Length: 300
Image (cartoon, rainbow, N blue to C red; front, side):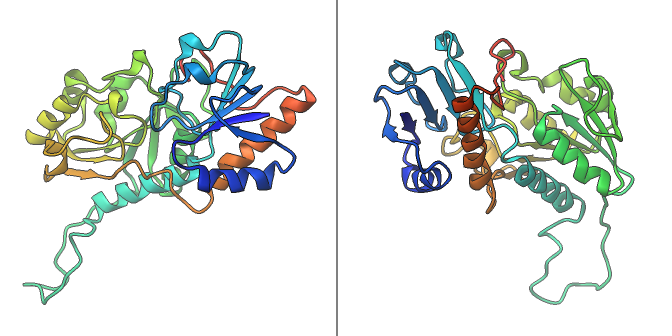
């Protein structure tokens, strides 16, 4: 039996789950069940749902909303990688929009001059990726295809999983990158990873893209860096808190492009998410190692 908590997305998730796991019995949490399957977007009270569960699977890449101290001996997995292609496409779209002044170059009446523009480009530029997990790798793959130099910072002391990516220190990445893309996990160690010191170290005129989690960026420090021109633009799909309160300066700042946490959205993302769970369910039943296991100590 599988207990589910989808926070209002039952109409979307349950039909797809029944399709990929037709022999599974789904009940609504907090009903007692061996497996707990859940979304964390609405910050639920997880504790009552854990009773009886041996395995918890989060339908998302991040587990920063999960009370890891209450996990006990249970297995915890997530849908790591399911949304990575869609998010990477979104990142490249923001980078191209910045370089090509989109939608600023669109016209609705005759301009003062034709053929008059000063647009940038990705080729020959430097993309710096903070966090080289599944999303970071997909961003790097696409940036390399645009003939960019790709720098990356990763927590683990291990080679890059993708040829052509140069692993560097955070200071070197900030100083050299034209586009700084945040894809790292949200943990206590990464909170305000980009604060006043990081913004001071950035290459002047850099473009910041955050598709990870809002708390990785000190938003007050970001606004200050935008105001003084150190950061030319911030493309933010995630903020802290979500949603931002009415009147927050990020809504109206001329150098901010704000989207409501939608970079994951694509026709295939939900399908990939439920198929990853279905594969893990098969593995659970057959005693095989699960995919997307969360490192509780690291927080992701």
